[in-house]
Amino acid sequence: MMSKDSSKIYDPAILLPQWDGQVHKLPIRVYYEDTDAGGIVYHSVYVNYAERGRTEILRAIGYNQSRLVEEEDILFAVRSMTVDFRRPAVLDDLLTVETRVKDIKGASFVMDQRVMREEELLVGLEVKIASISTEKRPIRTPKHILNAMQGL
Image (cartoon, rainbow, N blue to C red):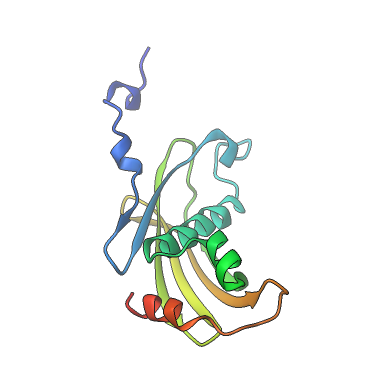
């Protein structure tokens, strides 16, 4: 017996990220490993989804975090995070993590993130990121990175 969703033709294109120069959209499918015993996405998993979104927006503007460590001696660390849980996601949901840069300072920046199910906001996050050296000391974010982010 086929479920309603399995009768549709599988389209891997629905899992491709989208980028319009302002908002990065990362599709994420909810897997069994993401859920609790009740089939609801466990609260800490949303933080992982958001991390993926922040990593991918950096890639979209031309920066790979491992290369930044090797070539620029810079790491990005979460300084603070506010999470607003509004609705639960469940097994097999197709979610979108929307990420945009909200504010930029010399040694930090703030990202606004939303975990969406179609047009429904499930979780909102505001994440302050600090720039630190590989010695774990605060440093100014390199100008070329700030300039790339300011265009967002």
